[in-house]
Image (cartoon, rainbow, N blue to C red):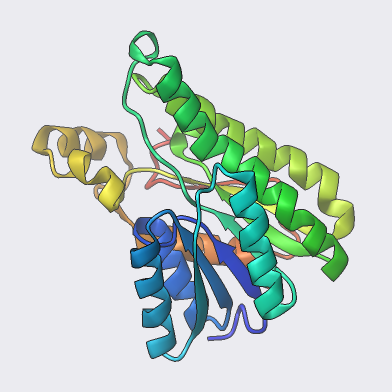
Length: 250
């Protein structure tokens, strides 16, 4: 498979969950993967796994809320591969805390990691894409960026911000042949969701909300991200692609 042949892709939060599946899939499709994560040991192991399977990857320790780290990661990618064709802003955290119970410290942490990181990634990668003549940016939001979820105000605000920031960037940089889209996963089985999916009552509630009667897999999100990253979606920009089993349809 060669849908990303000769393309360089930065994927944040690549050590586990959806980011890991995206990195493995992209590499299998011919991409040169720059895998980043706050967990350096895990992302280094991922890069070795990709190389052992015949792919090409480098790993970078990366605090996505740090502008200095973004500058370093982009410089590393350009130094290794010459350009950046794809950016997947995947890294994020969740916080299931009601608005009145959320501290300012918690609010700032969620906004910085989920939303500010997306801004910083685009700020540092877009000039490289402009110079190269184009590129594709995929920002991972959530169904919480489409609907007003209960009991997670900071998380919902951050993911709604990712959605609208993606649209703004799509409008601003379409003239540069840079496409920007957001992906909105629903109830997906990942390490971050294990505490919910592993709870029988919570799982039953999840399934009651979906049209498809099951929890989604990280690999299914990765395939949607691949579509938006590749030239298969060459005339697609500014959209929200829900990978949610029909939650938002209900």
